[in-house]
Length: 224
Ligand SMILES: [Cu+2]
Image (cartoon, rainbow, N blue to C red; front, side, top):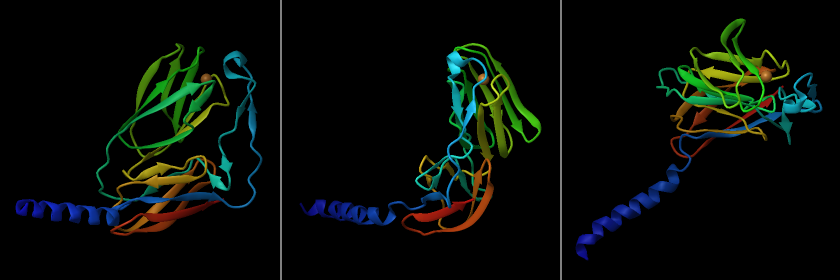
C-alpha cells in the first residue's frame, strides 16, 4: 500500500487542476442585433421550380431572439500557425448550404451538387473570379482552392437568388455565429487580443478581448 500513495497524490493533483483549466483559451459570446430587424424576406424563384420550390429565403440578414446569425468572428493572431481545412459547400433545393463559413487561406472548398439540375457555381473575390464551375450532374463534386484572405461571394449563374459567402482568414481562431448569434472559438492564447466580426451586409466591427490564463473569455458584439 505504501507504494501506491504517490500515485494517489498524483491523481488528486490532476483532479484539482482540471476544473481551473476548464474553458481555458475559449472565447465565446453572442452577436446581437440591436433594434427591430426587418421582417424575414424571400426572393422569387423564376425557374426550375420543380427542384427549387416557389420562393427562396433571403439569408443575408438572419435574426432570431435578438441574435444575429452568419457573423464570422475572428481573433487577430499574427504568426500563429494556421491549419488548412476542407470546407464543403452543398447545393440543395437551389440554396447553398451553409450560407456562411470561414477557413484559413490555403484551405479548399468542395462544391457539391445535391440537386437533380444544372448549377453553375461562381465564386468572386471582389470583382475577380475566384472559381467558375458548371455542375450539370447530380452528386457532382469539385474542389477549388481558397488562396488568399478576404471574402469570397458565391453565386450561381443559373439561379440569381442563390448566394453564399466564404470568409478566408489569416488566423486559426475563428467561428461563425449560429442561428441565435452564439459563437465559440477554442485554443486562443492568454492575453489581450483584437477581435474582428464580419457580416456580409453590415461589414466589420472591431473589439478587444482579454483571455485569462484560466477559464473562458466572454465577447459580446453588436450590429448594426
Ligand atoms: Cu443554381
